[in-house]
Image 1 (cartoon, rainbow, N blue to C red):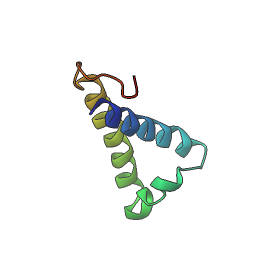
Image 2: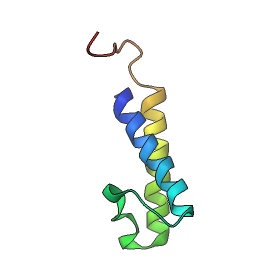
Image 3: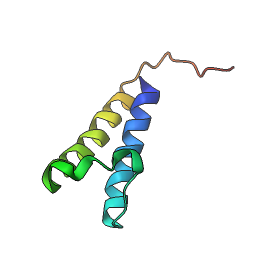
Length: 66
């Protein structure tokens, strides 16, 4: 869960920053199709949910490949 949370947080915050530069991740190009307000809610939601999952992720998870 911690890794998924990290990805969601990265894409949420990255989308917010890129939006100020009039750019967007290709995978998230659909976000503003329902309007600007909904797009911002999705971006903020991604960052919040990702941060919560990352912070409260299972502390006993061990990195794979070791």
